Image 1 (cartoon, rainbow, N blue to C red):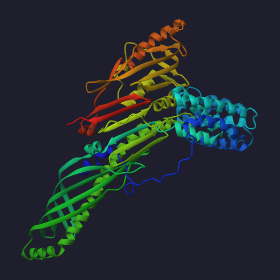
Image 2: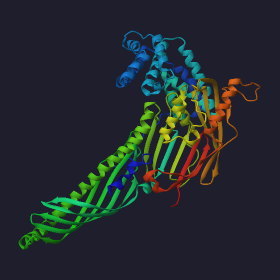
Image 3: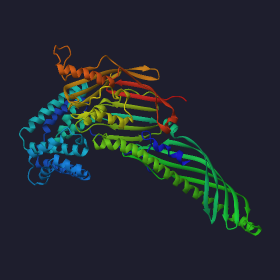
Image 4: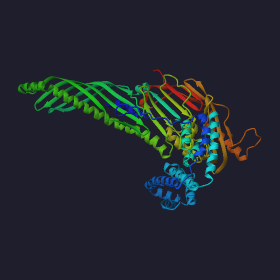
Length: 621
């Protein structure tokens, strides 16, 4: 029976969470009085009067942050053995440590040479331990060079003038390009310890959650619900009597979401009856009996950004038993019948307690195993790889109502904006799964993951296999076995824009490589429109791929060089496999044990106002 209860532990993405009392509401804190979006440009200009000269205290604070980041990296390198020692040599570790340990002002030229090592295009430098040190060095060098600088105030004023213009432009036409400029300006203000009220106001309006998902309680209940019918041996000892027999358990498992604003919560409950046919042995006496135990057990499980957890199961059992016969000699039988009558209530009470203990132990043991597997999938395959590369969302909050398990995410670092508003498109009614993604989610993630980095063909393929379990057929090896690589642009390496009932995706390559050959940069753009199709929707590419050098204006009269023509032809063939002329968004089926809920039909697909909205509904069985 408990094996059915713990099935829910396998639902990594549609799981529930548990609070100690069932769910509680976080206390609301008052919102600061931010200026409106219309007044933000004026607030930028007004912030000029709030310039704060930097002091040695600011520099010392940045140095403490740098020392802490270096300490975390030092522990990582020690754990990596010989490889860690090689990294120390490359990173000029002794010179670097000399600067950190000195009571004198650090040599900015030495730190600059160290910074270049961290900023190089090497695969391992994308890990969070290296990134943290790199960013901390950059902040420290900036503050140390800017203390008492007569030019800082003028630079501060120019930045606010530019930010005011960008905010005005973004309010009327919120493009990804302007969002990048605003995000960098806000990040630089934070680095310079300037205009905290203005920074908070801009982030309040333009760095809102950019990922929303929900799963219906009906879908979770359908996946978790199970009829139980199993037979198992019974062994027990009650008041000195050893009992052996067979138990037949019937009942059903149900799942119910529990409201909680801080995590996702679900109660998995089993209600059933176990009928037993037993023989008890005590000395020469054999006691034959039948029993009926009414069982109820609840297991509360929850999920948050850290993974899955649970409380011990809570069971209640009530046993009624009837002695049908006693064997063992006339005198012994008479005594046994007499004692049985006197002890019947106590025997039933002990049997109930033992039943509760058994079912609690069994459910907890089996749940622990499945929760370990669920956490392995969630933490090791999803959370940990992103955390190690500083790509895990800034917010990844689960919650539950009686109707839905919800997820709210915010993908943005200190130099990026997120969503300027909540999704505009209303979700279709009676959906089972819904996903709403703002284009900044993808753009920010891509920028942090690949901006300025060289990604080789084999690396790209291995990542896809790790994520999808196999390589998409469009990307399988062709007759052309020559290795490929792309060095992505330092700004906006991959961008997506959701608008006009579809989307536009652009890949910006600063340099391309094919075998030993190197080719100049090209931007590759594909435009798609959504349309209805049998069994779902489809995305139809609008025209040919647009492949041009950065800044190139078609029809301007400027001609491509011979090498640009060559790489343009190669990229058309290469990216044509990725950006196909048409692809379907079809029914999906949950894997393994969750296939019982049936297929999920896409019932809504909208690309509008910078948001992608997708919803699925279970197909009637």
